[in-house]
Image (cartoon, rainbow, N blue to C red; front, side, top):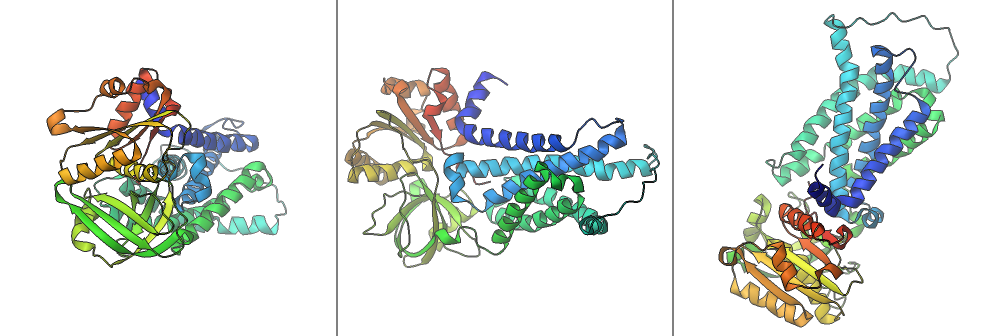
Length: 456
């Protein structure tokens, strides 16, 4: 891997890369404590037996953690760097679980086909000495046929649902509807795994770990199926005010909440539901929290099917549900200087932070670089006023007139950039390029923060 790609990946996902690798290594190590990929005697069919067990442990283990992350556990946000990072890990776990599941399926089912086609000759089974089986082992053996059949069809369903979830061409609403089938599929795969994992494993650490993971995954799946995800963090309210910026294709909405919102830090986001058929969508919060007013402001750009219809759908006085807050893009650091780069609608978390600084000034020197293709004088005047009130230096780049903002322009405008933390929110490709360039010029990667606001 090239050095640039290494720094890019490190900037964006260092915590979840560590979590992903650790989980994969721990599952593999626990399995190797109980079995081996080099059975004696080593042959195709003897290897098939142990590899099916190994790939099954990896698949259901990763899917169990993915199911846990799907219910948005607040206690995992900070260790993983925010819910946006947790969702990225959820995606990786799903893909890797599908890959290992495909290998598992092929060695199990494909071998049967190859024997049927005459490509392989199955060795004769030696008669085993009669032995007394416990009631649990007898029950497991009696379930094997059903578990194999259900597991095979659940694998086909999981493969289709995961592939469709990865296709950006599938609209978000359909993505959410299709994704609701995965908890059912997971429960079937958990039953399949419970029955077909070697009975000996249950007396060893790998079995204890798998039992715990499948229990956690199954509880998470049931929470998802019964609509309990985020329920304890939901607050109802009404739309208090709407302002449209047609030139920017942006709507600013202020919500009046009922009691129950715990407050938020600038830079966090929430899931907002205004149409139960459409469901909740995540939006960055564009206001500081004032417990006396109990209001939240969101700035939403028409970038998809649903957001393009919001201008016609939303009305003052309409009831809404808000779930959150989530995210760790919260500007918390002790550096004397910060550099903010907000591209397009990525300016939203910086607006919230400036609102907070206007109420409670800080000591840091802050430079905000805002890049936009569209021009709306009223919106830019409001942004400039927010920057003045927060004592933030605003640098505006309107790309049709000024061209692209280059990293060297940022460094020229902020001579002390090496002592700063850089906070970026905007298109992922731009953020990756910016991180790569700054790290190559000497900025420690840990001083670069990037919001991964893609929830799929």
